[in-house]
Amino acid sequence: MSITAAEQQFQLGLKYFLGRGLPQSFKKAMEFFVPSAAQGHPRANYHCGLCYHDGKGVALDLKKAHDCYLIAAEAGHSMARFNLGTLYRDGKGVAKDLKTAAMHFGIAADGGDSCAQFEIAMAFHEGVGIGKNEVRAVHYYRLAADQGDKFAQHNLGICLRDGKGVAKDAKAAVELFQQAAEAGNDFAMSSLGECYELGVGLPNKDLAVAKEWYAKAARLGNVWAQQRLKLLQPPAEAPPVSQTPTISGAAGADKKAAGEKVENGIHPSPVKPLLLSPQPTQRPATGMLEPDPALRANLLESIKSL
Image (tube, rainbow, N blue to C red; front, side):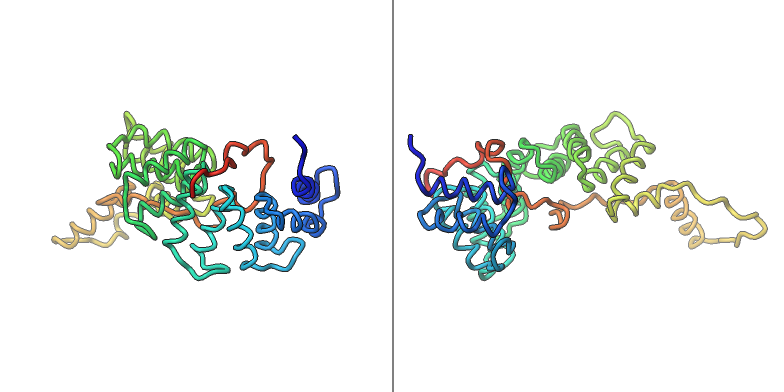
């Protein structure tokens, strides 16, 4: 089958874009992407959108990025559809519209994009831009988690731990926290530490392992883990008895009890980490870069009906 002129232009532009076989040059890449996109080539439109989105080789123009993504998305490009969702979610280049964002994330999710699956799961879980539905949230978390998304693995673990949208299964939650933690998710490290601290989903408590995971999360800036570590530190050596103020009466007993709880690393009602949506700096902008086409070919199949 002969290669179209639009495809030839796109492939040449891609070489410049990726720096494969030719010196990397976003400006040169756009010289080939633009005419290819004008002929309706989906991936050329997607790449034009990327360049306009980030100001690569052209002036940053979020409105043009939106228009290019839309053309690609309507031709079935899941990653372009995901990026459209982020523009509407964040109000960049378009008016902020969480309902439209959820629509785009849903279509991209059903097209197999793991980032979109995570986003629509969050939307269902929190009822943002779409009706709250914890069962649907679990469905999409699971799809993304099965593709190795460490944020989806953590949030699916939260759902299983708490029995939200799915039957409670603390053991399965621990397994997911472990996977996500080993992939570098500090939220999962913190949640895993909590499981070891409280013996959730495990045969026994293990404060030593709990502290190890809290320490790993704390080093990544996780505030909750930092707080737990403080409470689990061994108490400082007590001053001589003669220098210790005497506490008496009911108030004194309360203070003493509170002191014992802190010293033993226990607080009255353990605060479980909330379902956490990663901050933008913590989540790779997967939809914003084009990986090796061969590696994501299965995610770029056309959506048959929009």
